[in-house]
Amino acid sequence: MISIIIPTLNEESVLAETLEYLKKLTLPHEIIISDGNSSDKTVEIAKKYTDKILVHKEDKRQTIAHAKNSGAAQAAGDYYVFIDADILIKDIDNFFQALINDFEKDETLAGATVSLRVMEHLATRRDEFFFDLVNRTHALNNNILKIGSASGEFQMIRASYFKQAGGYNELLAVAEDNDMFARLAKLGKTRMYYDMQVFHTGRRAHNIGWTKLLYQWFINYFSVVLFKKSAHKEWKPIR
Image 1 (cartoon, helix red, strand yellow):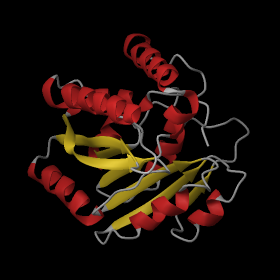
Image 2 (cartoon, rainbow, N blue to C red; image 1 turned 30 degrees about the horizontal axis):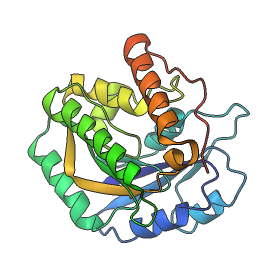
Image 3 (cartoon, rainbow, N blue to C red; image 1 turned 120 degrees about the vertical axis):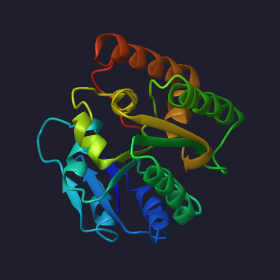
């Protein structure tokens, strides 16, 4: 079974469309919403699609890593799939069946990720260029260098390896996704499926601009690699 875990915080504008796409999945699965105490209709929307909803009630804002770990703690699947609230997956049964087939063929496959693309009606030429660069970087790190890396928009992790790794590092405000795949690559294999893709809104790049976003990604990635902590103490939500 697949456990699809979605961390959310004030995602009323995008969540319903994502969950509508997930409704098309006929393979055994569950959907877990791990909410950071949204002040909008996020939880209300989620209740129309799943009864597995966790709401963070502490005063201190949770990290994305904490939200993911909280969802995973309630998961019953053999594979944990972590996606953002604005992710669309086309031909969803064949998409997941292909990934499951590879996991079943190789018990040492710990984690998988795929290419990211911005939804066609929102995409710009800069989006296409820079996300292709990101995708090729993840392909290099996973498939050739074997050091592991992945964006947080889509990560599929074998449950046993997730537990062996100890989950995401909750002290990281950002880059917890790359950190996870780097650790998984030391325990088993990680793979990036360049020819498979998921679509998202590209909202962070559109809001702050590609130059600033690339800089933020760069400094946080190397801060985690070199110092085991993210450069940013908080990752500002973009809605």
